[in-house]
Length: 67
Image 1 (cartoon, helix red, strand yellow):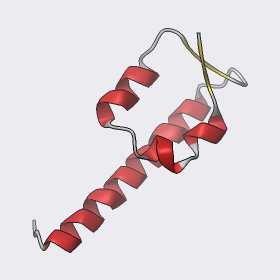
Image 2 (image 1 turned 180 degrees about the vertical axis):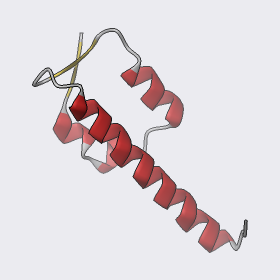
Image 3 (image 1 turned 90 degrees about the vertical axis):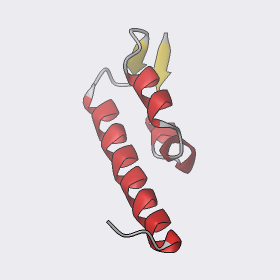
Image 4 (image 1 turned 90 degrees about the horizontal axis):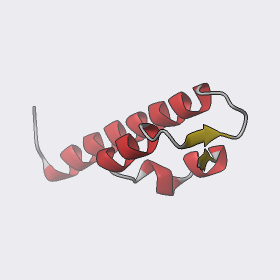
């Protein structure tokens, strides 16, 4: 069993995990939350997605790439 720690999910380290790692984590049958609320995991994934999106935008701005 893996207990999803909301403190870890709010950390920069969590925001830097790869998409594959995130999918492996949230698709695990062993995943449990501290409170039993799946919404904690959903919120963490949304923060991860927002952080990843901002990271891509920053990287594109510094590389001069345009879409």
